[in-house]
Length: 280
Ligand code: PAF
Image 1 (cartoon, rainbow, N blue to C red):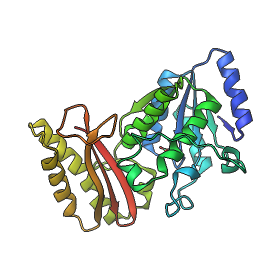
Image 2 (image 1 turned 60 degrees about the vertical axis):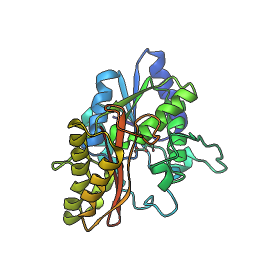
Image 3 (image 1 turned 30 degrees about the vertical axis):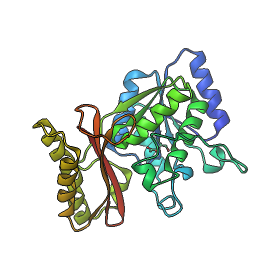
Image 4 (image 1 turned 45 degrees about the vertical axis):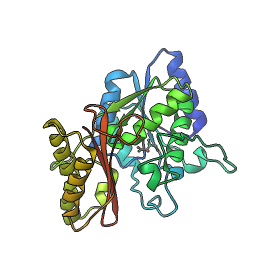
Protein backbone atom coordinates (compact mmCIF):
# COMPACT_ATOMS: atom_id res chain seq x y z
CA UNK A 1 0.00 0.00 0.00
CA UNK A 2 1.32 3.35 -0.95
CA UNK A 3 0.13 6.65 0.54
CA UNK A 4 0.72 9.79 -1.49
CA UNK A 5 0.12 13.23 -0.02
CA UNK A 6 1.27 15.73 -2.67
CA UNK A 7 -0.39 16.65 -5.95
CA UNK A 8 2.89 16.54 -7.89
CA UNK A 9 3.77 13.05 -6.68
CA UNK A 10 0.23 11.81 -7.39
CA UNK A 11 0.31 13.26 -10.91
CA UNK A 12 3.71 11.70 -11.65
CA UNK A 13 2.69 8.31 -10.24
CA UNK A 14 -0.60 8.23 -12.20
CA UNK A 15 1.28 9.29 -15.34
CA UNK A 16 3.73 6.40 -14.93
CA UNK A 17 0.84 3.95 -14.47
CA UNK A 18 -0.81 5.16 -17.67
CA UNK A 19 2.53 4.92 -19.51
CA UNK A 20 2.63 1.24 -18.50
CA UNK A 21 -0.86 0.83 -20.00
CA UNK A 22 -2.53 0.38 -16.60
CA UNK A 23 -6.23 1.17 -16.20
CA UNK A 24 -6.75 3.41 -13.16
CA UNK A 25 -9.96 3.29 -11.13
CA UNK A 26 -10.57 6.09 -8.63
CA UNK A 27 -12.75 5.90 -5.51
CA UNK A 28 -13.13 9.41 -4.09
CA UNK A 29 -13.91 9.43 -0.34
CA UNK A 30 -13.72 11.67 2.68
CA UNK A 31 -12.32 8.80 4.75
CA UNK A 32 -13.86 7.28 7.89
CA UNK A 33 -14.37 4.29 5.64
CA UNK A 34 -17.26 1.91 6.25
CA UNK A 35 -18.62 -1.13 4.39
CA UNK A 36 -20.34 1.17 1.89
CA UNK A 37 -16.96 2.60 0.82
CA UNK A 38 -15.39 -0.86 0.83
CA UNK A 39 -18.04 -2.06 -1.62
CA UNK A 40 -17.03 0.81 -3.97
CA UNK A 41 -13.36 -0.20 -3.70
CA UNK A 42 -14.19 -3.86 -4.39
CA UNK A 43 -16.20 -2.87 -7.45
CA UNK A 44 -13.32 -0.69 -8.68
CA UNK A 45 -10.86 -3.57 -8.16
CA UNK A 46 -12.91 -5.76 -10.49
CA UNK A 47 -12.58 -3.25 -13.32
CA UNK A 48 -9.15 -1.62 -12.82
CA UNK A 49 -5.50 -2.62 -12.88
CA UNK A 50 -4.79 -0.10 -10.12
CA UNK A 51 -7.31 1.32 -7.63
CA UNK A 52 -6.56 4.70 -6.11
CA UNK A 53 -8.68 5.80 -3.13
CA UNK A 54 -8.65 9.50 -2.32
CA UNK A 55 -9.15 10.32 1.36
CA UNK A 56 -9.79 14.04 1.71
CA UNK A 57 -12.25 15.81 3.97
CA UNK A 58 -13.06 18.53 1.49
CA UNK A 59 -13.60 21.85 3.28
CA UNK A 60 -15.32 23.54 0.32
CA UNK A 61 -18.34 21.24 0.43
CA UNK A 62 -19.19 22.02 4.06
CA UNK A 63 -21.34 25.02 4.93
CA UNK A 64 -20.18 27.39 7.70
CA UNK A 65 -22.43 25.77 10.31
CA UNK A 66 -21.74 22.17 9.23
CA UNK A 67 -19.59 19.46 10.78
CA UNK A 68 -16.24 19.96 8.95
CA UNK A 69 -14.19 20.16 12.16
CA UNK A 70 -15.84 17.24 13.86
CA UNK A 71 -16.06 15.07 10.71
CA UNK A 72 -14.46 11.71 11.68
CA UNK A 73 -10.84 11.26 10.57
CA UNK A 74 -8.66 8.14 10.93
CA UNK A 75 -6.17 7.89 8.06
CA UNK A 76 -4.16 4.95 9.45
CA UNK A 77 -7.30 2.81 9.71
CA UNK A 78 -8.51 3.95 6.26
CA UNK A 79 -5.17 3.03 4.64
CA UNK A 80 -5.26 -0.42 6.23
CA UNK A 81 -8.82 -1.05 5.07
CA UNK A 82 -8.01 0.12 1.53
CA UNK A 83 -5.07 -2.31 1.39
CA UNK A 84 -7.21 -5.20 2.57
CA UNK A 85 -9.96 -4.41 0.07
CA UNK A 86 -7.96 -4.31 -3.15
CA UNK A 87 -6.69 -0.73 -3.49
CA UNK A 88 -3.02 -0.08 -4.24
CA UNK A 89 -2.73 3.64 -3.49
CA UNK A 90 -4.30 6.14 -1.08
CA UNK A 91 -4.13 9.79 -2.08
CA UNK A 92 -4.47 11.81 1.11
CA UNK A 93 -3.54 15.45 0.48
CA UNK A 94 -3.84 18.23 3.06
CA UNK A 95 -6.30 21.11 2.61
CA UNK A 96 -3.36 23.43 1.83
CA UNK A 97 -2.16 21.04 -0.87
CA UNK A 98 -5.56 21.03 -2.60
CA UNK A 99 -6.44 24.67 -1.93
CA UNK A 100 -3.18 26.61 -1.58
CA UNK A 101 -3.25 30.23 -0.46
CA UNK A 102 -4.89 32.35 -3.15
CA UNK A 103 -6.95 29.48 -4.58
CA UNK A 104 -9.92 30.97 -6.49
CA UNK A 105 -11.31 28.59 -9.14
CA UNK A 106 -14.56 26.66 -8.64
CA UNK A 107 -16.67 24.35 -10.80
CA UNK A 108 -20.41 24.99 -10.65
CA UNK A 109 -23.12 22.77 -12.12
CA UNK A 110 -26.13 25.06 -12.24
CA UNK A 111 -29.20 22.89 -12.80
CA UNK A 112 -29.10 19.38 -11.33
CA UNK A 113 -27.36 20.78 -8.24
CA UNK A 114 -30.09 23.34 -7.44
CA UNK A 115 -32.97 21.44 -5.72
CA UNK A 116 -32.95 19.01 -2.75
CA UNK A 117 -29.48 19.04 -1.16
CA UNK A 118 -28.62 22.14 -3.18
CA UNK A 119 -31.60 24.03 -1.73
CA UNK A 120 -30.74 23.25 1.87
CA UNK A 121 -26.92 23.30 1.46
CA UNK A 122 -26.37 26.07 -1.13
CA UNK A 123 -22.55 25.77 -1.54
CA UNK A 124 -22.31 22.00 -1.09
CA UNK A 125 -22.25 20.85 -4.71
CA UNK A 126 -19.90 23.64 -5.79
CA UNK A 127 -17.42 22.11 -3.36
CA UNK A 128 -18.10 18.57 -4.55
CA UNK A 129 -17.76 19.35 -8.27
CA UNK A 130 -14.65 21.42 -7.65
CA UNK A 131 -12.84 18.73 -5.69
CA UNK A 132 -13.96 15.91 -7.99
CA UNK A 133 -12.81 17.89 -11.06
CA UNK A 134 -9.46 18.47 -9.36
CA UNK A 135 -9.12 14.77 -8.49
CA UNK A 136 -9.97 13.83 -12.09
CA UNK A 137 -7.33 16.28 -13.38
CA UNK A 138 -4.66 15.12 -10.94
CA UNK A 139 -5.21 11.36 -11.35
CA UNK A 140 -6.87 11.16 -14.80
CA UNK A 141 -8.57 7.83 -13.99
CA UNK A 142 -10.33 5.72 -16.63
CA UNK A 143 -13.33 5.54 -14.31
CA UNK A 144 -14.48 6.68 -10.87
CA UNK A 145 -16.94 4.93 -8.55
CA UNK A 146 -19.64 6.74 -6.54
CA UNK A 147 -22.40 5.36 -4.33
CA UNK A 148 -26.08 5.55 -5.24
CA UNK A 149 -26.77 6.63 -1.64
CA UNK A 150 -25.75 10.13 -2.76
CA UNK A 151 -28.03 10.02 -5.80
CA UNK A 152 -27.99 13.76 -6.46
CA UNK A 153 -24.18 13.84 -6.17
CA UNK A 154 -24.03 11.08 -8.79
CA UNK A 155 -26.37 13.03 -11.11
CA UNK A 156 -24.40 16.27 -10.65
CA UNK A 157 -21.06 14.56 -11.31
CA UNK A 158 -22.42 12.81 -14.40
CA UNK A 159 -23.67 16.18 -15.69
CA UNK A 160 -20.33 17.84 -14.96
CA UNK A 161 -18.33 15.14 -16.76
CA UNK A 162 -20.68 15.30 -19.77
CA UNK A 163 -20.78 19.12 -19.90
CA UNK A 164 -17.01 19.50 -19.50
CA UNK A 165 -16.14 16.55 -21.79
CA UNK A 166 -14.16 14.83 -19.06
CA UNK A 167 -12.96 11.42 -20.31
CA UNK A 168 -13.87 9.62 -17.08
CA UNK A 169 -16.53 6.91 -16.88
CA UNK A 170 -18.82 7.33 -13.85
CA UNK A 171 -19.64 3.98 -12.25
CA UNK A 172 -22.51 3.88 -9.76
CA UNK A 173 -22.53 1.30 -6.96
CA UNK A 174 -25.67 0.26 -5.03
CA UNK A 175 -26.37 1.59 -1.53
CA UNK A 176 -25.10 -0.68 1.23
CA UNK A 177 -27.37 -0.87 4.28
CA UNK A 178 -26.90 -1.79 7.90
CA UNK A 179 -29.06 -4.54 9.38
CA UNK A 180 -32.48 -2.95 9.69
CA UNK A 181 -32.05 -0.94 6.50
CA UNK A 182 -30.20 2.25 7.55
CA UNK A 183 -28.06 3.39 4.60
CA UNK A 184 -24.38 3.31 5.53
CA UNK A 185 -22.87 6.73 6.12
CA UNK A 186 -19.90 8.09 8.02
CA UNK A 187 -22.41 10.23 9.93
CA UNK A 188 -24.21 7.14 11.33
CA UNK A 189 -21.53 7.00 14.02
CA UNK A 190 -23.03 10.18 15.53
CA UNK A 191 -26.31 8.30 16.22
CA UNK A 192 -27.18 7.05 19.70
CA UNK A 193 -29.01 3.73 20.03
CA UNK A 194 -32.42 5.40 20.23
CA UNK A 195 -31.65 7.78 17.36
CA UNK A 196 -30.49 4.84 15.25
CA UNK A 197 -33.76 3.06 16.09
CA UNK A 198 -35.85 6.04 14.92
CA UNK A 199 -33.71 6.62 11.82
CA UNK A 200 -34.81 3.22 10.48
CA UNK A 201 -38.10 4.90 9.63
CA UNK A 202 -36.37 6.61 6.68
CA UNK A 203 -35.50 3.42 4.80
CA UNK A 204 -38.79 1.84 5.88
CA UNK A 205 -40.71 4.77 4.37
CA UNK A 206 -38.71 4.48 1.13
CA UNK A 207 -39.41 0.76 0.90
CA UNK A 208 -43.09 1.32 1.68
CA UNK A 209 -43.37 3.88 -1.12
CA UNK A 210 -41.58 1.54 -3.52
CA UNK A 211 -44.13 -1.15 -2.60
CA UNK A 212 -46.99 1.26 -3.31
CA UNK A 213 -45.52 1.94 -6.75
CA UNK A 214 -45.13 -1.78 -7.38
CA UNK A 215 -48.83 -2.14 -6.55
CA UNK A 216 -49.69 0.51 -9.15
CA UNK A 217 -49.61 3.88 -7.34
CA UNK A 218 -48.28 6.65 -9.59
CA UNK A 219 -49.52 9.79 -7.79
CA UNK A 220 -46.64 11.80 -6.37
CA UNK A 221 -48.76 13.58 -3.74
CA UNK A 222 -50.13 10.27 -2.37
CA UNK A 223 -46.66 8.80 -2.04
CA UNK A 224 -45.16 11.91 -0.45
CA UNK A 225 -48.12 12.14 1.97
CA UNK A 226 -47.59 8.52 3.05
CA UNK A 227 -43.87 8.99 3.59
CA UNK A 228 -44.44 12.24 5.49
CA UNK A 229 -47.02 10.52 7.67
CA UNK A 230 -44.70 7.59 8.45
CA UNK A 231 -41.78 9.84 9.40
CA UNK A 232 -44.11 12.13 11.34
CA UNK A 233 -44.73 9.25 13.78
CA UNK A 234 -41.13 9.47 14.97
CA UNK A 235 -40.43 12.00 17.70
CA UNK A 236 -36.76 12.56 16.85
CA UNK A 237 -37.16 12.71 13.04
CA UNK A 238 -37.77 16.02 11.21
CA UNK A 239 -38.11 15.91 7.43
CA UNK A 240 -35.98 18.39 5.48
CA UNK A 241 -37.40 17.19 2.17
CA UNK A 242 -39.21 14.14 0.80
CA UNK A 243 -39.41 14.59 -2.96
CA UNK A 244 -40.02 12.54 -6.07
CA UNK A 245 -37.80 13.70 -8.90
CA UNK A 246 -36.36 12.51 -12.19
CA UNK A 247 -33.29 10.48 -11.24
CA UNK A 248 -31.03 12.26 -13.75
CA UNK A 249 -32.26 15.88 -13.91
CA UNK A 250 -33.56 16.05 -10.31
CA UNK A 251 -36.61 17.93 -11.66
CA UNK A 252 -39.86 17.29 -9.77
CA UNK A 253 -41.83 14.37 -11.19
CA UNK A 254 -45.49 15.03 -12.04
CA UNK A 255 -46.26 11.35 -11.77
CA UNK A 256 -44.06 8.35 -11.05
CA UNK A 257 -42.29 6.80 -14.01
CA UNK A 258 -41.05 3.42 -12.77
CA UNK A 259 -37.28 3.06 -13.08
CA UNK A 260 -36.91 6.76 -13.81
CA UNK A 261 -38.34 8.47 -10.72
CA UNK A 262 -36.37 8.79 -7.52
CA UNK A 263 -37.81 9.30 -4.05
CA UNK A 264 -35.22 11.26 -2.08
CA UNK A 265 -35.43 12.00 1.63
CA UNK A 266 -33.30 14.17 3.88
CA UNK A 267 -34.14 14.34 7.56
CA UNK A 268 -32.74 15.44 10.86
CA UNK A 269 -32.64 12.73 13.49
CA UNK A 270 -32.19 15.16 16.37
CA UNK A 271 -28.98 16.95 15.29
CA UNK A 272 -27.78 14.29 12.80
CA UNK A 273 -28.59 14.99 9.16
CA UNK A 274 -29.28 11.84 7.10
CA UNK A 275 -30.14 11.30 3.44
CA UNK A 276 -31.42 8.27 1.60
CA UNK A 277 -33.27 7.47 -1.63
CA UNK A 278 -34.84 4.77 -3.72
CA UNK A 279 -35.47 4.47 -7.43
CA UNK A 280 -39.20 3.81 -7.61
O1 PAF B 1 -19.23 11.45 -1.31
C1 PAF B 1 -18.23 11.93 -0.75
O2 PAF B 1 -17.66 11.36 0.17
C2 PAF B 1 -17.71 13.28 -1.20
O3 PAF B 1 -18.74 14.14 -1.53
C3 PAF B 1 -16.68 13.18 -2.34
C4 PAF B 1 -17.31 12.63 -3.62
C5 PAF B 1 -15.52 12.29 -1.93
C6 PAF B 1 -16.12 14.57 -2.66
O4 PAF B 1 -15.48 15.12 -1.57
